[in-house]
Image (cartoon, rainbow, N blue to C red; front, side, top):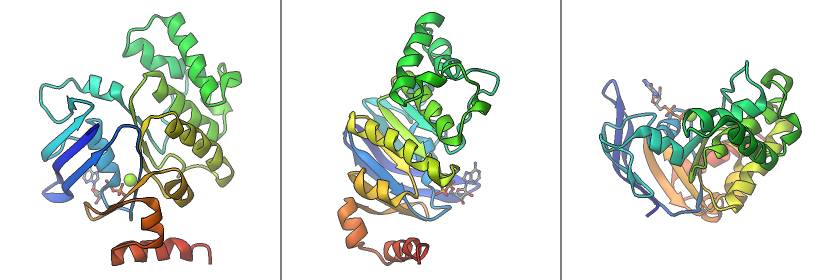
Length: 245
Ligand code: ADP
Ligand code: MG
């Protein structure tokens, strides 16, 4: 399998946060991870690119043993990009330099070539015309699209999104989801923690529903949204629907 997670456990201060996670994900899948706050969703994503070290278990991504001690985590992070809720752009750098930064610093690409590649990725997220702006001159949706371009520039195979639209004003959510959908269609392997149920239902091909450190449903969006198997998932979906009443 492209991503193979075996018996993954993670504790903080002896409190288990991930409990025996076992999951296989194929190349090109778009997986939505949903579940209540504190379920371990962010921790799970962070273990996948080595930002968090598991207590035990094994993660192999595209043949690379993320959890092995002698694996270069820099290489893991080149293969597995991550986009956060907070965009974390460098405030003192222009948009194009933000996107080129990883290429120059991590991949040793010469500056001019890095900037030219950065432009290609800015074009891809619809922001070529903002290349010379500074982050404070952009809307939240634009900043998140720059953050996505920055991740794409390193040419990852897998992109992890942790609530990429949660800090955006409602009118900016769609422009980010549209970019994410285009990446899903382009064949990137995507794992996204999201509260955007429309995206989970209609763009993802698979839902992982997490509660208290466990994946308690691993199924298709159709099944999850129309015939959830667990009481916990039913209650979660009911709560989400209640928001619209
Ligand atoms: P979610 O993203 O589903 O809301 P998290 O993965 O952020 O959940 O957190 C799961 C649990 O792990 C929570 O109880 C949280 O307080 C705890 N936790 C997360 N990160 C740390 C950390 N660095 N140190 C201690 N506890 C943590
Ligand atoms: Mg989280």
